[in-house]
Length: 189
Picture 1 (tube, rainbow, N blue to C red):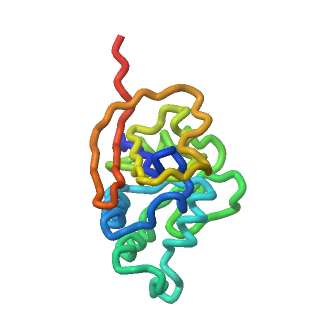
Picture 2: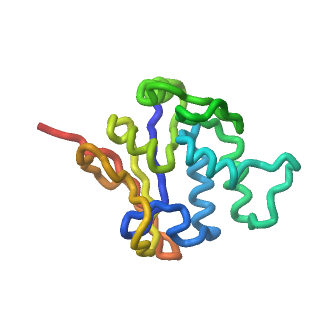
């Protein structure tokens, strides 16, 4: 069974607005590029899909925009070619190497996890909350930025039940950011 990892940038106070943390640097872009390359497929809700597509889809000209620096191009190439699943009840269709999932997202994700492969990746806010509530996330990865946002959406706000986690890995960046990877703790009776 493929593992599903939820990965997201957050601030020290839990804000997950994509503009609240530090701007990406070469080190963090290498890290996220490696994460994208390890995933067999990416799972997005509508908003995250539209956000990622607008930033990272290869333009029709084939030339990446001038705002991208050299460290961002490998990430853009990795996410652009990745297989994607988009959970949405409002989109009528998707492209960008994507398949639209309608209806019971939990059942669809369970089916996708059963397919051959190694790893699935989910980002965003709303879809990961729904998947966490169903116990479908196998690992949680937070790239914690050394910033206090003071406002904005917070990660997994509204989770129905507490999820106890155990630390699996930790990586410190020169910027002061720390990547923390957890898995749900085994419950022993």
